[in-house]
Length: 318
Image 1: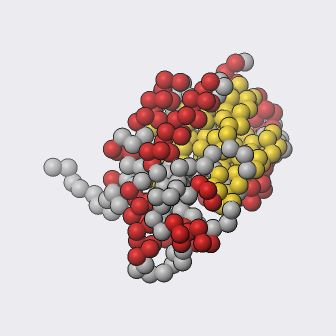
Image 2: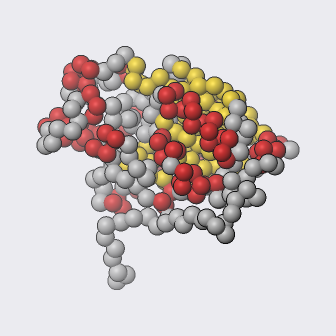
């Protein structure tokens, strides 16, 4: 059946690092290219818009009250996405015009948390151009905690896309068993994992999640090379002094519901990876194992999920 086939595009690209407007234009160009190739879903890497905070590990990010860290963080915040202000409207419009769904990794500066702290968020835009979920990364990893705040469970949601049910997680939270189960339990059969860019991350976990969940798993990573740092970056000399030639080598890939490769990790290549998925393969592999269905014991173990959007202040209705 036609509805059981879904063509997906993995956008393995570099950002115009810490430049919100230029990166949005680049994202839009790849949405148009994916649409021209009949893709119905396009996925971009973790925090592609406007980029991953590579400077932290290169410029002594743990130094307290550092002018360098403050100025870089402020530059990051200035280029972060405020969804409430319409920063994603042009991308939503393009999704609607081309009838293509989008998973996009952003740095979010949400008004509902005061408008100053930053979150690594994964945004799902449906084929009608509507933002249906914004998942703020539950637990920033290591040095990420010096610039990102921890998120909440509000975005642990799945979405219908033709015959598929799609959900997604950011980077290392894909290793967190309970958030994975929260998506499985909602019927997820196409899992999206987004990463800043390394086959070190994608090579093992992609196949593992596919085999555990008996779902398709799409891992999408960005690229980042020394030449991708714009000349306008604050303290660029300090960043480049310790930066390797390649900071993110990609590693985007797809595993099938049997845990075997459909597309093995692709390295150091910028562009789109296109593939058509067949929903029937999910049903075939669920025959012998279904982690939240016939191969579960809810009478023994269950998961409780708090999906309330967290806020510091609540006001009574006037």
